[in-house]
Length: 369
Image 1: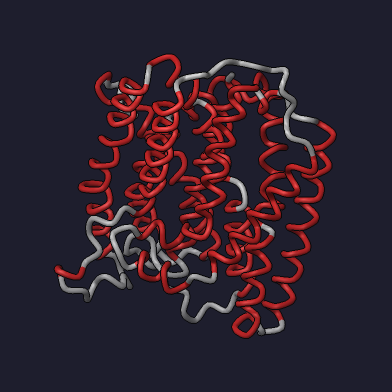
Image 2: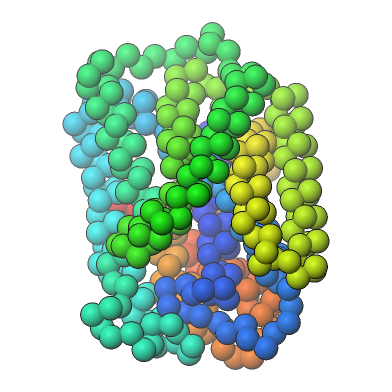
């Protein structure tokens, strides 16, 4: 099933692309590209809409695919061997990245021009923060929960394709309930600020989506028993995808009107809640359509994209450092900010996947990433 690896490659590439503009608004591991004196509200709007559009589906998709392979893996290996393998494949990259890659990235970012970390005392530097590694922490927690479930009730995994995939009513209910939960969670700003300032900073950014991440992972576990992802209802998927596109365009229109009326500061709260509510409604359609399209076109996309999908885990691990190097190399040479963002995105994706491909030629490294 090449299409699963092909989708993973695309999702990780989008993750890298979304992280690039953070250097313009805030900072990326200490690298900040100044925007003062540049009057271009369209850049900020384009960045916000692109980030929002990707956020509606790419992390959800990664948790769905991760959960999809857990039940057959546990059935094949047993709980103990499975957890031992997960400790190797998640624990070792996590520790190496936390102690080396993240800290080196932060240290390099400190010495970049306009870095907010430049004046910080060494004892206040944000070292040993999980950053993007929070994804691995949450994924391992989900693995532990499913293994505990199997240990308590026994391993009853069996492929049963007679169970029909959920239909429209089920998807509407799940999208609506999770949308309400995401809106409620997004209002817990004090909690997210505390987490953001702690070593678990990733959870401060992604905390509002915890219920949806949990749902997608365990939906993937359930779907693997019935091959639901390979038996999608084409008519339902296409209809929902059209709704997703229409909803996203409506939100873009509202965002543009607010931006060019200079009312972003006054309407930001209401607009933010509205966009949060539509996360799942947009995401379900995009996820379904990507699964459907890649299944039908996996031969067209080719083995090269599937190979990139195999390298995607390593690319995700090292992309923090890669982006710091790329942004420092091209972010301060006077290029237009649009060109900087585009060039850093392309170079960041190519270098992250390319370096991982070379590292995986080392057998000991390939066992881990």
